[in-house]
Image 1 (cartoon, helix red, strand yellow):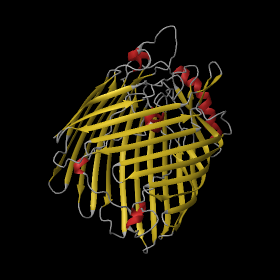
Image 2 (cartoon, one colour; image 1 turned 60 degrees about the vertical axis):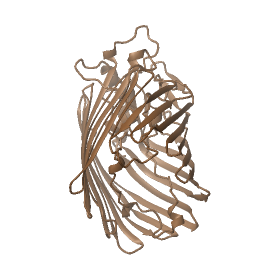
Image 3 (cartoon, helix red, strand yellow; image 1 turned 135 degrees about the vertical axis):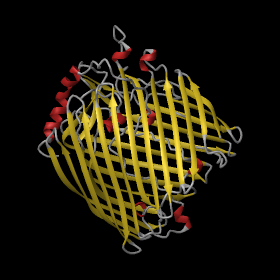
Image 4 (cartoon, helix red, strand yellow; image 1 turned 45 degrees about the horizontal axis):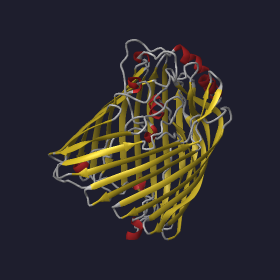
Length: 558
């Protein structure tokens, strides 16, 4: 960052004292309950009223007019965000799979009810209708809660309620969509461990309210030489500790076909953010990313620049950086691609993004953006035949203000984000293998290895050294749909600054199975078994999750 970076780290480390003065919640706030770790859970229930997505020019990968055989290749590789949290490792019963094994064109709407152990309840509904002149209206409501949890019964209960309405208007030339939603999450700071007295529930209660509105306009004619997509929206967040955040984001993507093989692309973002806690902080970010792409069946080259400006009034930051963008993809034989490149960016860290990764944050947590000074990567991806696909990648990235989460001082039930204002270097090795048997069986295995070399922080607290996932889905006779997945985390470390003790958290194994069985045209039964291993693991220190938990119920379509 600039000369202000040391100030940021100093602020993060000294903010422990702020945490100490803010531990007692205000008497009047509201409550909030459970969340399945948001890298945000968006319930997509378009079902039968789905509008066909446009094949955006700016999303096209290497070749132009591929053969039928080449179109079968479905590369799963994508740039991963810096955050490493996973919704599966968030405490709580997970909802059953929303995927349907058998299309039912007659019934577009449904109601779902379910219950399980830990006093869990699921209620969900979706209603959609197609009006005149290509207008589609959709509404969804979902509530998932657990009355009790893994620590002191109701003191670790949680709930998550979401409501969303969507309107779509489609013509041959444009698609217009507007969304409005509300989410209420309630939970408790139950990581107090073994204490002489169980704390009062009101003293450890937390609640998050999130309101959002978004409208978007995009080109619907994919044959146009010019392609575009424009979206803008406002998100309002507040919690029980008098924290609030206003976030207005606008995103534009456009492309122009210069020749059959050359495209000009531009992406632009503008974010205006105000965070209010004990103080008011105005934090804005503006980004423009012009690039050119050359694409042929054998070679694809993307080159350009990513220019980003960030401002922070409280930290007196007004920074503008430019990062080179180069990506080269070569397919010398068949469906095997070799790729390499370099990029850089400034990652926005807002109160909402950090809460999506770790919900047990302390009041007045310091916020600073993470600068990816440079990410140098290379690898290979492709299809091996017989339904198998693969990819492997090596990435070496340098960061300024690389952040980690650790328990606060003196109240270890809450967490702060600690920033490394020096240059943090992260080596990431990724391997992924997929198998698909037509549309009947799919399996995907991915493993990531991380090595952290930090300047000022002692360790990458609560970040894994190894992270793996294995996901599977199977359809039998168009009636039975089964999904099974396994998540693995290893190498998590944490520090208790009160006792000055470093903990190495046990490896995490989280296995889950979900089954949907269709009883007829309008009824289906479901059951979800989560954390089958029954391990009360800790993704974050002092916060054990629920053991084996299940949820079962029935769905009625109409």
